[in-house]
Image (cartoon, rainbow, N blue to C red; front, top):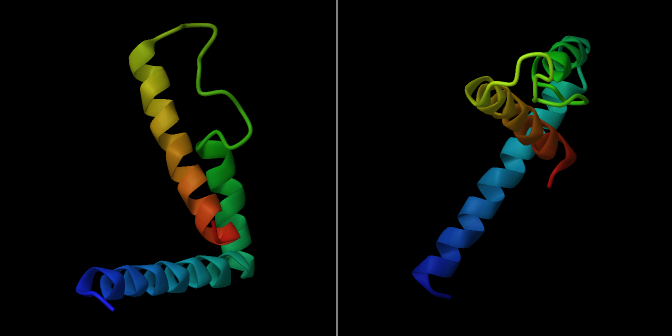
Length: 79
């Protein structure tokens, strides 16, 4: 096994452990409260585009917040 293959295995194990940690936290009562708050703040179920006042910078900012939500959600789901 090459050094690169060993490193890939270690990275995969670390990511799996981190994903398990996200899930453990998300399953707690406090974790559920935090996820509910973040889902609204990070536009989990809404558009990032402001139709009343279109602004590309604001849209980019809101898209960044949504990206954080997608990361958290993917870690909880183990993707």
